Image: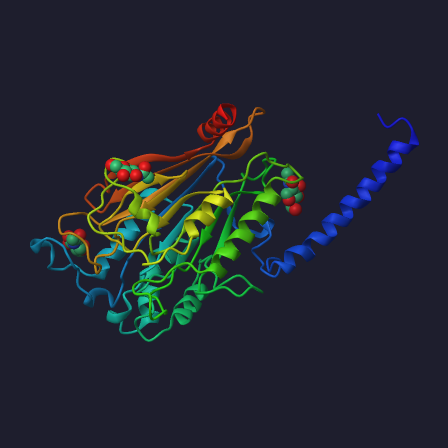
Length: 400
Ligand SMILES: *[C@@H]1O[C@H](CO)[C@@H](O)[C@H](O)[C@H]1NC(C)=O
Ligand SMILES: *[C@@H]1O[C@H](CO)[C@@H](O)[C@H](O)[C@H]1NC(C)=O
Ligand SMILES: *[C@@H]1O[C@H](CO)[C@@H](O)[C@H](O)[C@H]1NC(C)=O
């Protein structure tokens, strides 16, 4: 093809240029505070889709763990009170892990109920013990009750990060971010596939705070501009990498966001347009810090998962983003007697490529499991699928 030496010379120049680009880009990444982190490079991420083309996440919201056997259950039927304690929360987590064999376990805050925890270190270790024992990677964020014992929010998050098997991190390096426990995890394509070194599924974890520290603003905390800036940078960097060579992909890899306190936009739904139930108000911050719009604008996040409101467990869609609750998991957390404690599952499935290998994520589904005799599955739904969103985009651009 390159018959004359002139194109060959340009080809050579282009090659030199490519080498230059690839050499300077780590510097650019460092300026963004990413390359100092050992897990920021895809190749060191321990998470990867399985050979069946699937990646499954168990979300555990609001364990409210305290002193184990000595900490009694709340809001169970009168005949269920006796012999019911934090150990029932432990047993539920063990059963969930056995039944679903997830690839990742995510704890979305109020992991411990600080004001009833005599020793927060012990409570944290007991709360996460089934995840640690399972050897399955796990990640956690803070709620508004985790720091109510003798450890500060920083202290709780630092202890979580030190526990075995966790992928949780304190905060991004070389970047000042509000809160503790803002980080992302990359899930790589199937080993031996063409995109085995790319993050095909991105998970964002944020600290949604506890309570407002602004005297004139009452109520719960919110996701601050510094956190949103970190999210934006991380998201655009991941999208750029995914859509550049080698193996440049055409559309961004989908992402999910996990944190504790629901966004004000969770109040946009009623039973006509969500799956699940709403049995209490939406306890978001009393101000809207704009994280919903930030995520919609970023384009990669497809669904958000929170806890905090234990007897809400719905998922609704607003402007292409699914907003989901998990429903309360813990027995020492308020709930509703006779309404089972529950957990939310997410399953991402890859698409088959024309040559029979695995490509990027094709669909993301969810369901919940109840802590009843058979761990009943309820409310299965599709959160996102590549073909339908592709078609929609095409349709609207043709229409305009
Ligand atoms: C709590 O655990 C005990 C011991 O396994 C069990 O007998 C009891 O039924 C459980 N209670 C609830 C509400 O699940
Ligand atoms: C992925 O990275 C590994 C290790 O750096 C390398 O051996 C392999 O060739 C890469 N695979 C692809 C498809 O890029
Ligand atoms: C859900 O339906 C209600 C009417 O029943 C409507 O007011 C609301 O805007 C809808 N929400 C969304 C996100 O479509």
